[in-house]
Length: 537
Image (cartoon, rainbow, N blue to C red):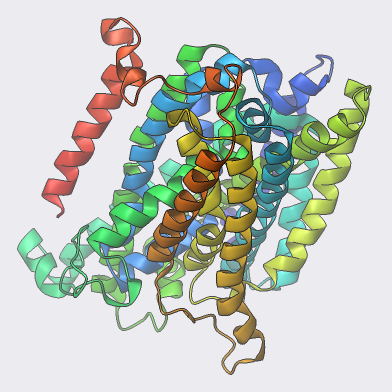
């Protein structure tokens, strides 16, 4: 890295830190202001924050590596996310906004009961700790070791201190304002790298799409594959369309780290349009994060010994001085926004779902104080867990393997909670506990052997790819949910206020408002996705 690049990176770090601290303003730091930004967010900020809190260094590094190794098929994680974001905007957001909840576990309490709230809060904290923060820290450390030669643990500590500082001081408002800025930096950085990669193709004699196809692996530009052509990824068309919605329902519709932005909306319209806007943004990563990996295979196959080296090689070989610094800032954007989002959600969950319920008289000041302490503790635990990242074949696989263990029972109780009037409080808590034990057992069967193996890499002990594992666990949880539901008393009328009267009510319950109607934009997004899948099938 040149001096110019290092100066750009340093200025960016200082700028984000100052912006995060100042963004809290001089308003009274009540629990509502700290955890939900005073419920003042518009749909543009919500959409940008949803995108930024999701896209981490894991995506930038992992998607480029996956593009190099397997091709565009890994982009299904981005486009299928757009589908699930439509679910969030049209199906879940209306209930979340009308109930004026502060956390997703609070919604489960309204729909089912107190035990479900407590257990979901526990699972949500685990998800934030192990998925959002721990693996993001590891990914960031690996990248910065490649660029700057800084020791992995030193990188983790530097990143942790900077991100935790503005998150703890400024709360959610600081998080979403910095996320909005970071989204812009992130997209610009990724677009710049993609442009430089495309411009380098003619230099090696690739002047047309036909030339490009001749240089890549079979199906490397295909989004949909049969089971026989899925390769090592295991991402056959049925695994994607069955397994991803389960992971997505947890991640995009019921995970506090992500959905907290929707809960902070200033109106129901903003709460619904924000996810749809994020859905449009999620189309971009296939072209600016996965495709560069495919181009990297054509340009530098002989220079890349491991797929995880794809992004560093692209940056070092293609970007000029100064631009490298901008891209490094984009990597920082992705990393810090994800960690900040998860830290704030953990603070919210403990302060509101645990501390406030244990002691109802707890003041706003005490809640905020508890939230800050929690952020520090969670960060320390995440630093410890981040050291295990090397046990997975790839970082992107790591977060999805953990998600496959946590998602099925949560997806079950949320999905049937808003669509089934027969789902009971007993069914919810039993499904959550049973599904959690089952999921953790499946993960442990993969993870524990790696502690004693040589090499110590996690494999599919069960012989089932994680996407299909998520689907089958969801099927089992669904059976448990309905068996218990029909063996226990029906829910009360108060609980059924958070359930749609029929499966299509979310589309038909309001008069169409033309260009102002969120359903119009959800429909346009869905049609756009169909067209893209037809083109890249």
